Length: 293
Image 1 (tube, one colour):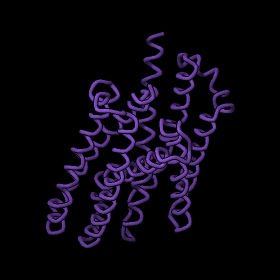
Image 2 (cartoon, rainbow, N blue to C red):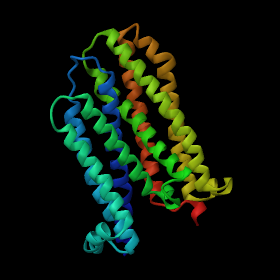
Image 3 (cartoon, rainbow, N blue to C red):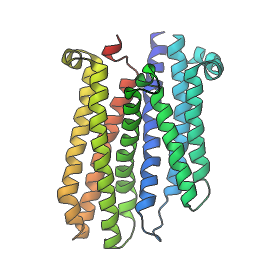
Image 4 (cartoon, rainbow, N blue to C red):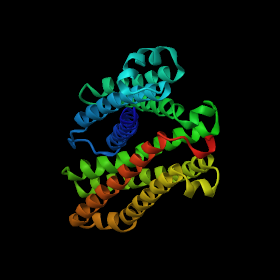
């Protein structure tokens, strides 16, 4: 039974991690499409389809893990309860709504090319996903129309934008040929979006973290609090790398191509740190916050 619960925990954490990673890529790709000059060809469509597919599969696996947790069973027994979970619980129906939003993104990204109407529809579908996903966590336990719920929705969306624009830019865009002027405009837009996302993350993160931890004793004396501190440390390191890029890397990149190489490397380091923070957040979702105990 212990091994069964270990498998449940592993599925719960890994599915949450992959889900946020997939959603983040979709958010970053959506932003990059706004900033890229016409004529620059990138394989964003293929990566978008992969990210949407990963997020959809991760959502289903996350629901299976939740079925096992709520039923107090292993994964094999949870498979027999899965359909009932989907059709007869608010959690299951909400998860289906989140999956439907991701399926909509997948369908909208399937055709080649892009249009203003399609991009608006993708943005709406991703917003629906963010709100429904936030309602499935600890914040949703207090109700939909609450400050914790709003903070969690904004927090998830801001994380997706920050991680996404860093990943898409560092792994895809800055490797593509484009003029220095176009690249500088892109990097300026990326920097402003990342800064706005960081501000939203810090504000909502402080509120949500304190709301769940309750006091400084819980912050240093519980597994939840220590994991949260680890996540905060990774985010602060990523902010430091982002600060370097904004004030040193990007000005250098506007003058020399070698500066672009340095910015790309810094973005990839920042991405690794942010992936670590997402993993820490996934671990937090598998634990009850001290304020709820």
